[in-house]
Image 1 (cartoon, rainbow, N blue to C red):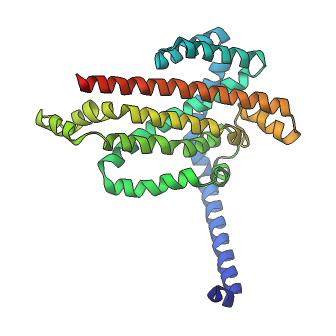
Image 2 (cartoon, one colour):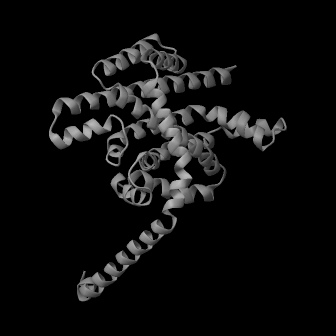
Image 3 (cartoon, rainbow, N blue to C red):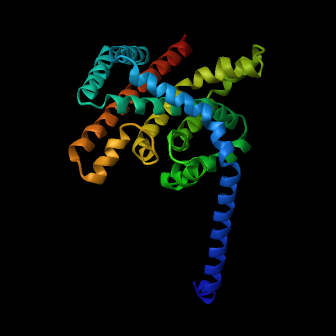
Length: 296
């Protein structure tokens, strides 16, 4: 403390100079490459707009049938299928259908992006301790840093809209799928790998035929957590122009509309419970298949 008290002005000047340098550098970068970054994300933006319009404009019986089919394929439970359909009927009855479809659109796209990037990254981490030691601190930062902090550079680079919101959701939701993919592959029994090697399996055969199938329960647990964390970002993403159930919740907070906030909040909870139960059931079925297959 005495060391810092002797040079208070010097420390403040250094800090001010550092802040100015960071602000100037980022401002120069955004001006130089902002248009290129927006052009890079244009295909993703067009796809999100198309997918959202598809869900909103599709007849509600078709959407309910798709939801019921997905719930049945994942859970094999008629109770869960019926509960999912009833929840969405209630959501539509109370006038939250369009916002719910917009929320499903961004959550679906974010989840697929997280899966497409997270599973290969988790596999890479499982194959190299050096890669794991490098990426793990980055995942720690992604999970612990407040979401409003990384919203600032994203909005400064890409402005207000769907793509910045999607990026923010992916940053927050990606770590679980990466971590659990890495964990699942590392937990595969060494004896099983030795048996695969004894049968002459090469690297790709061992990875796709042994390690990934045995790691699927952990991978789907990661998918489950990624979906839950993506849904948790719905309200925050609405602050930067993302349509969905988060917009009425934000309006309710700003204007003290208790009923509006509760209804849309409960709709988010219902969607989260449906996704959680379906993905959990599917993971349990994979686990049961794995145990039964190993016993055979």
